[in-house]
Length: 58
Image (tube, rainbow, N blue to C red):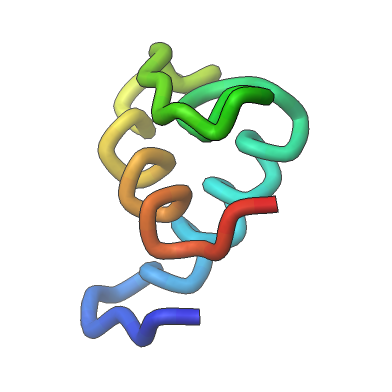
């Protein structure tokens, strides 16, 4: 995975992968196109988006 210099970066990436795989929050759709949806938790949208973008798809 891409290294992150921000505190909690690894956790944000993990959350991004989990939400993306579960089909929640921000992630890639079945067609591989980027889709942006509100994060399941308030105030976590930025972290989830960043985590999903940095983490490998699938």
